[in-house]
Image (cartoon, rainbow, N blue to C red):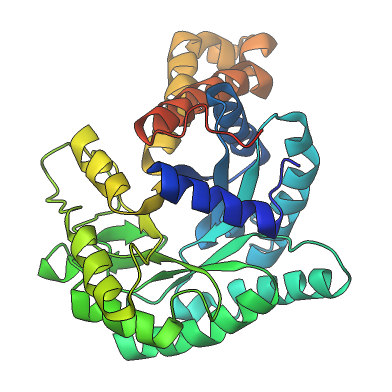
Length: 340
């Protein structure tokens, strides 16, 4: 069962929470990067999460129409076929959808899964993300309530981002400042609006200084210990231990200790995009530089088909990205934890 059923996805998240590990959530933009992610998980003997952002879905939809729903559905259907050859389980997720793209992305995808469930099938995607971090918290949570109800009806888990992650992700930009830290009051308001599972399960992308993009260790001030404050503050009011399933965004350049602290405090999913993009592209650049006169018809020559054949450099790119995925599994302690 390589694509998780709703029941298996819930089990995956429960196992991560109990075992204090997290699943790498790998952004993909093509069938090739999908295979790289699947290969990396399989080599690490780890289950995982494959995700498609709005920009990734637009790219997958083709540059002629750039239709996000078409791109996301096409890759999801492809994943249902090819993932069967990998001895691990993955969940399909859509990443970062702001308010102005809900009608062109998440809402139609929710409708597609609702139709599938009504026919006795599993949803096409196992989770979707609502990124309301650019809205007021009140508006963010109001939309979150609507989407959570629709997601729960379609046996889908919702991910919500309640406060900003710094940097830029698919056109959504936030400054790097003190607003990048979620407060206990923010978490309490979230629990009041969305419940703690009784209205439908959701993942919470809380902010503890996270920044999207490329940063060296030390350039971003992460405070993953803040997640413990949120768990305890909400848990005390509702009589629950560790009530939230947290998501780690903007993790490029994080130290091993920062990741470990986040895992101890309830992170079950960590997004990877920047690092895997580089790991995919770096071998291609190396190939092109080493085979300059083969990939180009220099001075009227014919070049070398074996070097400009996309398969020659595509295999290297897949291997490079897969290796980075296996490293992520090790960092997040998910290596060897696949559901048997």
